Structure formats: structure tokens, C-alpha cells
Image (tube, protein in one colour):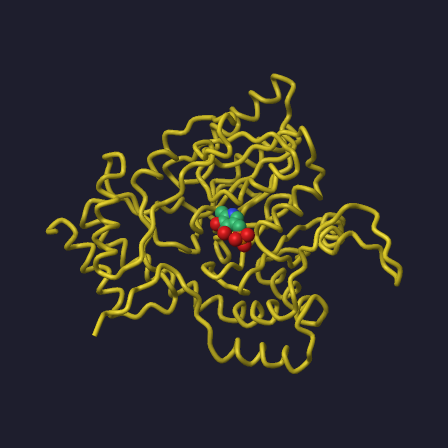
Amino acid sequence: MTTPTIPLCVPSLGDDERRLLGECLDSTFVSSVGPFVTRFESEFAARVGSQNAVACASGTAAIHLALRAIGVGRGDLVLCQDFTFIASVTPAVHLGAEVGFIDSEPRSWNLDPALTAQALDDCVRTGRRPKALIAVHILGQPADLGPIVDACARHGVALIEDAAEALGAGWTTAYPHPACAGRQVGTVGAVGCFSFNGNKVITTGGGGMAVTADAKLAETMKHLSTQAKLPGLGFVHDQVGYNYRLPNLNAALGLAQLGRLDGFLARKHAIAQRYRAVATRLGWTWQPQLAGSVSSDWLASCLVGADSGRTRDRILAHLTAHGIQARPLWLPLARQPCLAGSRRWGGAVGDRLAAEGLSLPCSTGISEVELERVCAALESHETT
Ligand SMILES: Cc1ncc(COP(=O)(O)O)c(C=O)c1O
């Protein structure tokens, strides 16, 4: 009998999901109309501590709606974290913006606050004030956002938080900036964007949410997400919008998952703690946790050695041979062929993360036996 592969990160679905999906099917409201969407929006907003939430078809759609609602258009400049998944920035490119990338810092693997302030200063000095800055809470770890909030305010730049991977993460009251202290990620910038893709902290199958304290922005995003159709029976559209609605069926799944969020987070923290002990013993660097912040520990990741990826790739091959799914971290955006030629501030930290980064299986449903299997394979990698 072959040992089953341990997947990287798959959802946990059970009776709550079955019950709400059943209710949704029975109601026949499986598409874009139905009560689960508004319930999911209001319960999500309450959970993260935001005034408004707009459900949409994906995290990418949430970022697209956010940028469009704050007025990003052709020829505008949008700056973004360099070390992130490409969806953080593709909506800005679709809107015709010029994009530039800022490196991460080793303390959080997120935007370097000093470099970010320098990048904004550089742009403003040369008469090219960015319309927006996209800060990411990568792998679930909150960014050191306080000084970034200040730099954005100084220059009148809208701050968008890409919290796709970070539902449940935030800053404690010990975090030394009042804009963030005691808040959850996504609720500090003009708009915060979340993803409910199948591998995220909670899933709707596919889906996303944009949260904002600004009722007008929320209204604009909702309107744009529904083809910008004016109310009434006629088909009159005052803008060119999108079909970015989240179907009722997906919202039902999201509501059930949201109810289980605390349990998912506790399991994610326990998994990270287990791996962190092994990584430390092997001399690897676990993703650091910034003082005054709490990560969602979405995707258990570490750096495994400074030799241009050879060690990492050897470990990946070793894990694959043991039926364990693992992944490298992302190539920074400025290095992506489709974004070549974009301006970049710094880059050494992101390059290192890409060369040495390794993500390990961390589904909330992973068993203790499976966790032990992964840990044993990690410990034995040097013997093969
Ligand atoms: C950092 C980041 N931003 C944006 C997205 C886009 O989310 P989605 O896949 O729901 O469009 C993802 C996830 O896929 C992500 O990891």
C-alpha cells in the first residue's frame, strides 16, 4: 500500500459547511442573489472590526475594486511590495497604472518602512506622486504598518492592505503606533482585501472581501462589482463595471468557515510552533514575528540556506520523494518576466526569500502522525 501524499494546504470542510450549503441549495438561491451574501458581509465586517465589507469573486477582484474605487487609472503610479504573489499588483496593471516595487525587511518579510518612505519621497520629489501603495501581510504576518501609514499620509497616497493571506492576524495593543495597535489587518488602510481561495485561512471555494471604514468607498466597490447597474428594472449602467459578485452558494460556505475561524487559527499556530522547533534545530530561519503583532500563520515557511536555492531545491526533492508537498516562496515581482523593467527599490531581501524560502504542509486538518512524518523527513534530509 502506498503512503498518501501530505498536501501543502487544503481546506477543512465538515458538518457546518454541509448544513449551510444544504440550506442554500434548498432555497434555490445559489447564484448572485440571496441572504447568505449580506450575512457573510456583515459577520465578516464584525469579525475583523470594520464598518463595511463587500463580498466579491476573488481576492484579486477585491484589490481591483479597491484600486478602481480610489480612482487609480491609466498612467497613474502604484507602488507595491516586491515580495508577494503576483495578484497583489495585476489589478493595477489591468487599470493601466505604472507599477514600482519596494523590497521587504528581514523583521517581517513585508514592506521595509524606511525604504517605503524613501520610495514615496523619491517619487514625490520627481513630481510623480503615487496614487496608491499596496502593502501585503505576507504568509499571514502583519507588516510594520505604522510608519508606512505616516509616510502615506505625509504624501497623500492611498494605502491598500493586501490581507489575502492574513485573516485573523493583527497588532496587539503593545504595537507602538495608534493607527494599528489593537486592530486586525485590513482595517488600517483605505481598503483591506482578503482572499477565500481554497488554500487560504477560510475558503468559499473561490472568493474575496474588501473591507473599509469609508461607506462611500464601500458603496462604489459594491456598485462596480455588480456591473455598475443603476437600481430599477431598466438596464442602465453609469460606469463600466465588473461581474465580481460572490454567489450565495459560496457565501454560505464562507459563513460556515467563518464560524470555525478561531479553531483554524489555533491549529495554524500549533503547526507553526511544531515546525519552528525543528527549523531552529536545523539552523534554519523561521518567518520572524514582528514585536506587537500576531500572525495568522497561514503558510508555514522558513529559509533553509544561502546557496542560491541549491539547498532548498534539494530539500524540496527530498520531501517530494517522501510524499510530502512543499513549495518554494515566490519570485519577487520586479523579477517576473511580465513586469520586467519596472522600478525597484532595494531587492536583496526578496531575492533571498525567493532563493531560500520553503513552505511546508499546514492544512488545519493535518494529523499529528502526518506532522511527525514531515518533521522526520526534514530531520533526515541531510542523510540522503
Ligand atoms: C498575497 C495575495 N494577494 C492576492 C491574492 C489573490 O487572491 P485570489 O486567489 O482569491 O484572487 C492571493 C492569493 O491567491 C495572495 O496570496
